[in-house]
Image (cartoon, rainbow, N blue to C red; front, side, top):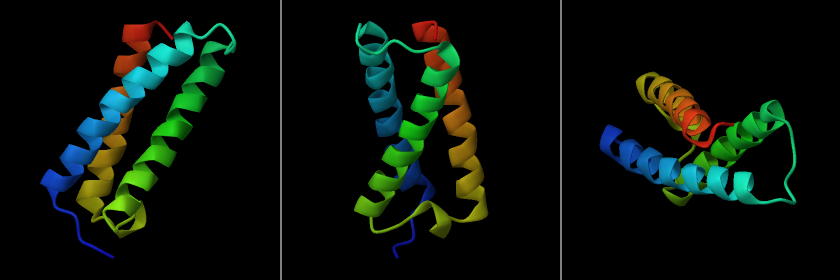
Amino acid sequence: MAVLTEKDLDEIIDYLEKSMQTLAKNTRDNAEFSTSREELGIFLSNQFDIRMDNLLKAKNSGIHHLESKLKNKTIQRKREILEKIKIQTQI
């Protein structure tokens, strides 16, 4: 497994943030996707985890191989991103 630097992780999370914003907007605008706010929040959280895992695998790494500091940073950024999306999309 490859060791990621903080810069590498920042790039992944920045990319993921844009991806999640697009997903939230498309989901909200899709009439076929009718669900409660809570379910949509859970869906977006799960998608964040899945996409993060895929992006880390592409870098030959994984969430379990990150240093504690980087894991904590990832968790904090996830919360911030999901809260920002919630406010922007009124989810």
